[in-house]
Image (cartoon, rainbow, N blue to C red; front, side, top):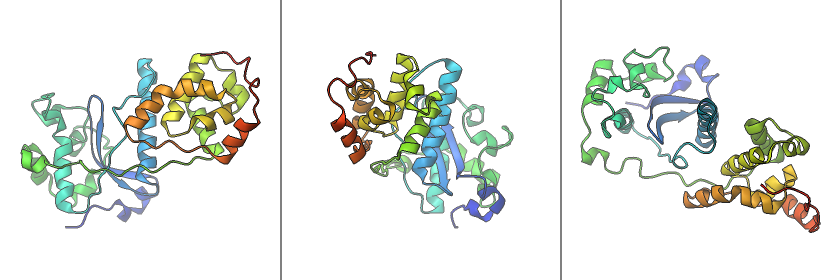
Length: 264
């Protein structure tokens, strides 16, 4: 049987960047069975994660990253493997014994398939056109053994070095704090500046680029992003290399350029 393809629905395809067939939110990570539409999966994941982290941090008055590490992805090339992942994702709450019945776990797409959660966020009809809900329910409720789980989600796509232009970097900065010029950014409180530099650096923007665009001294940007940089290195995220524009900017700055800038 062929894999689901939401592109058959032209109206829905026109308004979605990606299609989600299954999801399960756990304590420090999320599982997604997702299909690209009009943007790369990396962009979709960045948009999904940043939106949720912004919402969560605002709601619970916290700062910093939320998920454990950078996303890992694995291609799905057969209907059988698609169903295996559908089972694996929906059965996640059973492993740490969070619930006795999967339909009682509120942070999963399984309740959408059962019609408990409305309106459905997940593209469930695309799946249910290929398998009856009673058959799917029997699969989901049957615990997976170790052999079936062996090797699942072990492979992932090695992230490529990211390259952002000035406008894209300012879009990130504006998303986190509303500032879109150096003067607006420098008018922010020092702790807020530090938090924004940390967050944008986590997106893969190098400290030299951040220094050039915001006017914050390079040495201070380095200190503000050092913890993020160490975490990125440990999770194999490749930070963008300094551009010739960055190097020229720092070369033209003499030692006294930033002397009066306060430390964080």
